[in-house]
Length: 581
Ligand code: ARG
Image 1 (tube, rainbow, N blue to C red):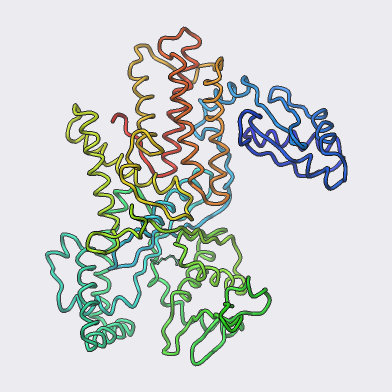
Image 2 (cartoon, rainbow, N blue to C red):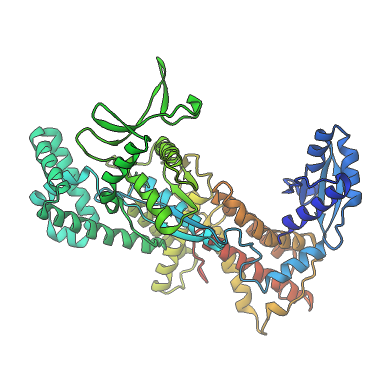
């Protein structure tokens, strides 16, 4: 049990003793440590219900509270109960973590299966900054969920069956450079796509040719199918290199095309069950009138008032759409993988799409915890959408290359003694870590400004700062001449900075599950910064190697726990820790 859970259970017992009821007694971490470590407003809520004096009720609850060996409690303000954890409680709790791989984190996801749908770039289109956000956030959510005991299925639902293939097929046949395809397949496909796209603007005849290629592909033409397969193969190969570099892995790559065969049957089923109906030759899902229009994704407010906003699942020409595929995908995930939850890490612009999918799924009788985990845009330092000099969206590769290049320069200055291989390896770890941390330390919904110097700073709210903290701790252990067995150490927390460090180490187990409450890895990111700062204050205030036993072992154990927590926490964000830098 985490401290928070322990407090909640003891508080609930006291509430029961006083009121004779099983009332909820939630406890939260206190915002300001001067008033304690944790806080509860349970007495105020209960007093309101029973129309009694909240402070008097809080006092009765405190009198009934058994906090032996755990904490002290006092009343504050209008009836809050503030808890202060005993230093020896932190000492025993932290010492117990020396033997616990999971650092005390409870298995809140045990027995549950979640599919995480993230990254999902479109074949032959460049992976843009939006895909970076999805990839980094999605990977971190997978890691966190796995750590919490969920069965996690990471699925890369790539866009491998879109109208872009008309242009790609035509470009492939008329202007492919096989050598370029060999060296950089993604770039070559993008080039071909862009060139044909530009040509269609100048010459409508080309657009017709492209459309005809697409129709042939959809009708199963052997030549076009073969080219399409090759496009996907080379794209996947290119993508896998990027994912490898990022340390991102998937369990499945079931792209849109995987569901093609299921679409006709799905539309028939929707028609039969009355979930969809025909409208001007197309098949659409309309509002069923059970929701208020403001909550109904199939209604939209226009000048003339609330009007229909249907989701089309089959066009009048017989073609299927993004929504049709997503419905088929959802069914597959539930039936084949027994998913209890599906998390879609996709940008804000697709909000309406997912509201419609979830609502349609409900009417279809598919139940589960479906979430659209949305995120905002990345802005350049001019606060406009980030573009390259030629005005195109910045690709992921460029961003990574730039980050690694810049960190290589910083490392060369800081530590010229490293071998070139070591330096390159560290630059990679730091550059990529910096990009990821800049992403994950923000609230995902706010647009964030991509500022190179800020994200790479060694003294700042950055990954390099955390990695450097880890490296400094590892350096302490390298200096050790005798052997130190952390698992045998007993902790004694004599100073405020030691208590605070232990408090934060113990809190890791509460932060990790909390990040999934609203899918906010930034809670974990910011916690790690706080932990590193607490470590530095401790290290300034308390000699470690030069102190006497048993204090020395106690402090070394705190160092060890800090290092483990930092590296475990960074790992949950998908960020590696170098051993030196
Ligand atoms: N390929 C889509 C895009 O780039 C994202 C797909 C997200 N996943 C989904 N199941 N719709 O916009």
